[in-house]
Amino acid sequence: MTKNPNVLKWVDEMIALTKPDKVVWIDGSEKQLDELRAEAISTGEMIELNQEKLPGCLYHRTQPNDVARVEDRTFICSKKREDAGPTNYWCDPAEMYAKLTPMYDGVMKGRTMYVIPYSMGPIGSPLAKVGVELTDSIYVVLNMAIMTRMGADAFKNLGDESNDFVRGLHSKANVDPENRYIVHFPEDNTIWSINSAYGGNVLLGKKCFALRIASYQGWKEGWMAEHMLILGVKKPDGEVKYITAAFPSACGKTNLAMLIPPEGYKKDGYEVFTVGDDIAWMKQGEDGRLYAINPENGFFGVAPGTNEKSNPNALECTKKGTIFTNVAINNDDMTVWWEKLDKNPPVNATEWKGAKVNGVEYTAEGNNLAHPNSRFTAPAVNCPCISPEFNNPQGVPISAIIFGGRRASTTPLVYQSFDWNHGTYIGSAVSSETTAAATGAVGVLRHDPMAMKPFIGYNVGDYWAHWIEMGKKLGDKAPKIFNVNWFKQDEDGNFIWPGFGDNMRVLDWIIKRCEGTIDAEETAIGYLPKKGDINVEGIEDEVTPAVMDKLLAVDKDLWTKEVAEMRRYYKEEIADKGGRLPAALTAQLDALEARINK
Ligand code: GTP
Ligand code: SPV
Ligand code: MN
Image (spheres, rainbow, N blue to C red):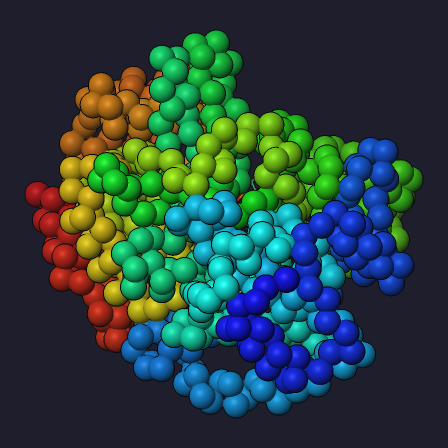
């Protein structure tokens, strides 16, 4: 399939190490994929769903101990510890290779190794990059077929000589949580993953390559790899404005990317197009602006909460050619169900761990039928609002970058930074209540700078300095930077902003700010909407002026605490731990504090 000696040599070495019975090169053809589907169904690895209602859809269940990313077993193995920085677990690369090599030795005996060539980004795009993943899991092959441009074409992009491909080695081994390792060697372009079979740990093109390795490559090569959705908003005048947004895992990227505008906006001619829902690679274009591509080819979305009302576009994506992982099965008709899909859990259900239960009784007792981090893997082409620019090799020009997270208080619905460096500060200050997307406690406030804490493949201080550097390069062509919070709560813990489609109202303000057609209130923390400038037509009953006041409040006491916490964070979690904190960010924090105290 390729004559590239670098690929062939490395594959041979990995075969010698893992000793599979058989090696299959994945060409990307439907015929080969069909054979793999049939094989996986015959062994029980995948379950065939109702092919009339859900054509081409399959179901997979992972081990109950293997349902999310495992951040405490994820390593960045740069040669020097300081180069991994304080946000990563680090191990000396030689030591890590020595530890893992015996674990991989003969691990594929009795199994087949699949050699998966793939491109992150449209084939032929100057922003795209090639990876090769070796795996013993058909589930991984079938997911990579949806999530990437997979198959022989990817090798065309690499050429016969280049050594610029990411080497991914995955074995599910015994799915032993005690010996689970997700390891990155950024200086070797290499990822080793063992003893997991869950999404983000094993679809090595996604978080491992497109964020951890790519963020490192972007730093070295002058571009950016970010945990961001990309969307286009078509305005009544026909112009499309592109926006990226970084929210931590399970904080609303897929939902915002596929937003359906409220009736009034639709009537006026607004439309939203999805370019990406999780990852953006961004590079300065010839005209000086920042351009973004989505390196992925599908959506690995959170199932629970997805429904006809919250995200009909995402739901539509899952109607064909989709793999469901850890949701519930309705045994009456072999369809799928998850929490909040509708109000009718199936009576004759199989819950995500595989037990047959009465779904009505089971959920009434407070149990989840689907795992909170259960996922769908759906092809991007299924998306009713996929952007016509989705495959544009040059990407789309970005007008605004948005940060956000789950914050019950403090952070207003929306505000704009004074400039790029202030926006970089705001990104560095993102914190969010944790979700089920990673193992560990849920609902704990933690710092998650740029929503990239688990994904920065090098020193976080160098990463921030790279942001500041990009701002200098982009100059007055730089996107404007904003912060949003869809998750403000009242005293009883209810969200006070309706969210979802109504987030269009905030995008509307953001776009007008980018165009310079709307004024703003200058506050200590940044520019906020003036009274009446967030359009609430149609939701006046819910978002009364009093509620809007709460949504846009900048509480001096809370912000004084926020600044104190950022001081502590910058010092104790970053600078004191070798985080190479850029002086420009300390200056931003000083300036913010001064403005608050004024
Ligand atoms: P990853 O795939 O893990 O990176 O997650 P994501 O950022 O794409 O999150 P997603 O859009 O899947 O949303 C996760 C959860 O947040 C779902 O349960 C949604 O229902 C909920 N959610 C998304 N948008 C909103 C919103 O505007 N308001 C509220 N209240 N909840 C939201
Ligand atoms: C996330 O956790 O941010 C995801 C899912 O998008 S995973 O692929 O598991 O990382
Ligand atoms: Mn994500």
